[in-house]
Length: 263
Ligand SMILES: O=C(O)CCC(=O)C(=O)O
Image (cartoon, rainbow, N blue to C red):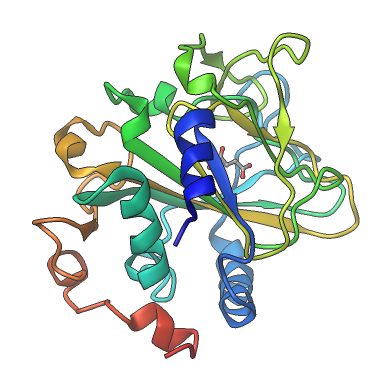
């Protein structure tokens, strides 16, 4: 569970960090799955025209995860994820989006500054929460996630990101905005509401770095979601919660813990 201090930071600054959110066996399971899924990734980095695939820079996106991975589809149903997400946005929650970005050694490219709600268009951005998991140690040298505290109170203008085949981006001026690099060991998790501006930077180190991003939304917005799993939005809490039976045909409660040999 998040502490009162973490919850206060989340309410005020729009984000909070849970170091060691996932234990060593969980991290090992996630890392092995990322290794397996890499073959299904797509390099979204482009030359400066926003179209031509980049030969050098690589931002490998794997999306969605649930249909591709029997392991990762169970993660949103884990006790720790359900507990924290409901602490942050209350009961009645669905998983909107799940993806991984892999940054290969030396050629890994970042994901430019943006607010997720510029994609999602939810009337109140604080009603959605992104959970970004450090699959490997994430630090300034390998381009970890950076956030702008309290930026959910600003509607920033977004334009097409010409370094990506589909992303959008906004401008952050570090002389005006406070920018916080979030450094975490593998297994740490950053929670931020849909309005918080964030970006990752290039990985110029000799080791690969990956981040896994899950986006959760209040069930009340279910029909307003424009982006995400178009037909399958697994409910993880609330009146429509079926433990995954409705969406995946099996009870997934406890499955994450069993698969990671925690139970
Ligand atoms: O890991 C990345 O490069 C970007 C992730 C991201 O922007 C997100 O989770 O919203």
